[in-house]
Length: 374
Image 1: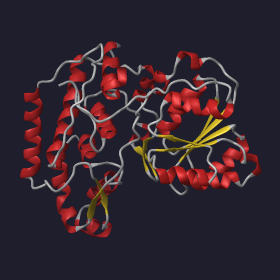
Image 2 (image 1 turned 180 degrees about the vertical axis):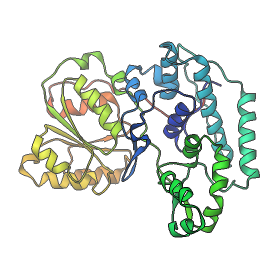
Image 3 (image 1 turned 30 degrees about the vertical axis):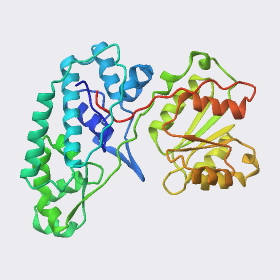
């Protein structure tokens, strides 16, 4: 086996295993991950995010994580042994999730392999490690708990009365709802079973709750890798705005659009977006549909009431490409609709369609990032 990906928190797992195996590609501004209303983003840009722009579509055909490991080995930034350890850790975690899932279905797809292959990992080694981890988890009677849940304090007073001040303060620092049990195990340099067992009495009393939290934003497409060379030629300096609470979406859009010759502005806060847009007067606006405090439909409806934006192209971005969403988008005056994960040429085509209609759109390029084993 070469690699495995997918599951509940593939990006958290990726960052966690880079840290675990000493790969210095993770930003540690303030030592924490910055919390946002509807998800979690790194406090500053990780180095591996920038490295995505050095990959081609062919490189990423079987997964951006594996492609990055190949890239770093080829640059001699990491050794083949380090890459193999990361791959092994990822595969074991994916198989652990499968063991916990119980009922499964499978599909087999034919695919091509990249030119560079990392060290193959023996299935016997993978399954043996997974079995030990799963058996340990079950023997500790934790089978009904998920290591992907984040512990948060619900009854602070009871814990404070029953523990020392130093222990309580340490809990408050660690159990902030931003770290899963798996994340905590790496940070504390302890086995995840041991970490969970240390919290179990409080969990059973209801003083600590295990809650579900989202994965970090998934870099599902290196937009620059998919950008045709012809599209990189300078064009008229139109200003394009992107209102999206995801750092990765704004970052990738900025790289793509500035490379294509456009000016770019990103807005991460839906509430203040109208004021920012009024001050800059962009030629085209991309609006994420699902954001905290206000959604894309509400913002679009408000923008259309302003004379300045009555005829400005507004494109809704969403991962929920359903008929109801498209109908609502038309109703509030949206000019167009793009589905996530975004495709580089689809983004450029919609811009040309509304700002430069004389340019014929080219064939769409796509980079899938489905969960898979290699």
